[in-house]
Length: 112
Length: 116
Image 1 (tube, rainbow over the protein chains, first blue to last red):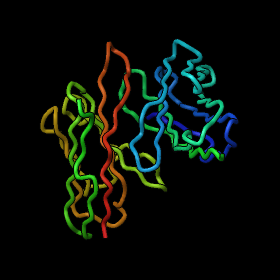
Image 2 (image 1 turned 90 degrees about the vertical axis):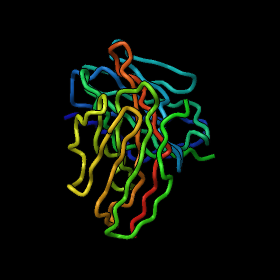
Image 3 (image 1 turned 45 degrees about the vertical axis):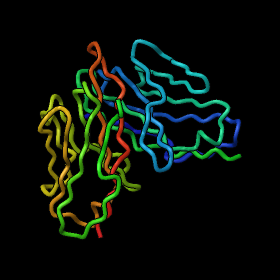
Image 4 (image 1 turned 60 degrees about the vertical axis):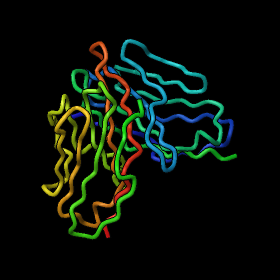
């Protein structure tokens, strides 16, 4: 089965600094890499995703980079703000399947 | 669409009782997932369905847990008998399969289960 590892488990940054979360996966056939954000007491929601035919995707202050050779992908948040404080989850479902399993999560705290 | 709808939002029950959690996926979505979330274990996939058929239930912790999807608009997760260690937030999520590609999964608001 798919094994997705996520690091770090917790991340504390000063407001305005950047935050980077990294995930590694084991199935070389995976071709879709979503990131979900879960605010305290709420449901996980997709914030950005990338497919294997591109190496980077940006959406305002968030970006995801993908290295298929090394089998890792990263979430980058620039100019962090207090509302970025949340738990972030990555996933790497198999190419031909839809078993959606998540990494262990990263708790991000943005200090004002 | 109202999104994925779960009920109840909160459930408190006594150990040994049967608990049934309910989920209505987004219309047209053909995949449905049940997750359990705890501080210790994170977001665990319990089981998922495709076109109402269970595809992978390897995450179901033990025989006390069962899930059904009798039709495209309804699924249940049942725990019988319940135990205190089952206390967690249970999420249901649904997704489509758009043009042969993976798509976004949408989560319900979750059911917070407390077994005392």
